[in-house]
Amino acid sequence: MRVVIAEDNVLLSAGLELLLGTRGIEVAAIVTDGPGLLEAVDRHRPDLVIADVRLPPSFRDEGIKAAVAIRQAHPGLPVMVLSQYVEKLYARELLANGSGGVGYLLKDRVGRVGQFIDDLLRVSEGGTVMDPEVIAQLMTGGGGNALDALTNREREVLSLMAQGLSNAEIGQRLVVTDNAVHKHIGNIFAKLGLPVSDGGHRRVLAVLAFLDNQ
Image (tube, rainbow, N blue to C red; front, side, top):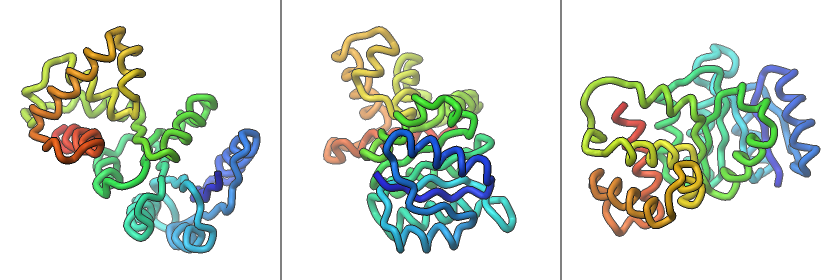
């Protein structure tokens, strides 16, 4: 697997390159701003992009804007975004494209090496990974929304879906059977009004509904 990294913190980018190298993942390029990221993706055609949300010159949203632009220009290209803080709008924008793997992790998650690599591989294979802290903060949002119809267990299942867990992994986490998980997910889809014809994409639509109504 080949990746392009967009990160202005030299220590973090060097650490990522070293970490990925030990797992046989090639870093094709390291850039420090949005335009550089777009150019590097066009030039190297990587299998995965890792980008900081905030890049020079303003350190506001250059990284996320570049990531969204990449997903539009290169449909299906997996993107993993790293952020120092929970920023809900950015998580939703990344998912809105609906094609290819996408991840949104807080930077302190990188230190959990094994889990971080697993998350990268999940995203590279087309999965969706949301940081548990992001999900936890979204779950505390107040006010009524379209998720009110879900039971507490269904909200737990949807939260784990947003973290990118498979049905089997959700069952293991909640100590329930695969059939129970399948039933909960079916109820979630039905209560959120997601059409059967969307197939596997309904998981992404459900996560979008989750993010959009917190």
